[in-house]
Image 1 (cartoon, rainbow over the protein chains, first blue to last red):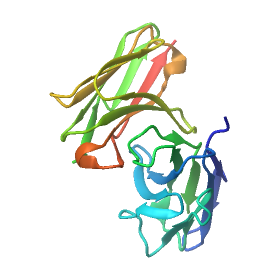
Image 2 (image 1 turned 45 degrees about the horizontal axis):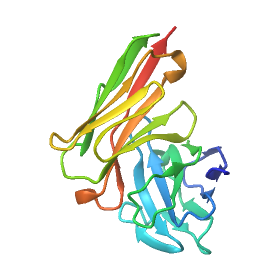
Image 3 (image 1 turned 120 degrees about the horizontal axis):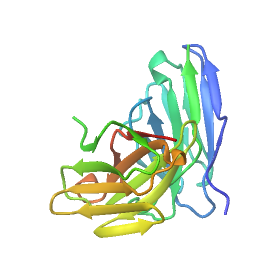
Image 4 (image 1 turned 30 degrees about the vertical axis):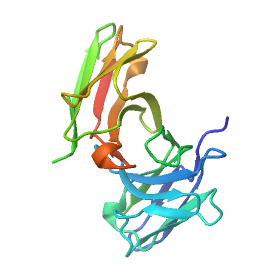
Length: 115
Length: 110
């Protein structure tokens, strides 16, 4: 079974530029998560999708971050414009369970550096 | 103050040592997850616990629901065990989401 795929693996941009990350979850997984993990901290949930609907985006900085999962499969996360404090690893995870409390499978992450 | 706490923050051990990493949380939950993150890599799920104890190879995870505490033990540690170990609580008061601890960075020296 293929795992969660993410691209790119690394990205370096200057502040005020835009960037987009892509995630393809495990086939059949209804729930998709985007997390931000700042160095030395645990992951922080940015947004949770169930199929193509948003379940929780309460911690997403909506003035600069956006995410979509139009067909209920793959997803993109965009930052526009980026700030220095956005430097982090962006993790995508998926889960088969609709309730969200089941096991999550994580992708390799995208390491973003904003200079 | 993080809702899920871990100790120690950093841990260095010699190969072969028995290792314990602790996780505590403050509210009722339905499950506690232990995750492993290698440098530059993604996160791998090790255990999902709702009660008692689970064992997989050299790894053992326990949870005490009444005391709101969980431990991850590694027996006969090896340098390849070097990673960040993260616990995450879910369900109950936390609802559907994972609430992550800050992680414990483990280095096992040969």
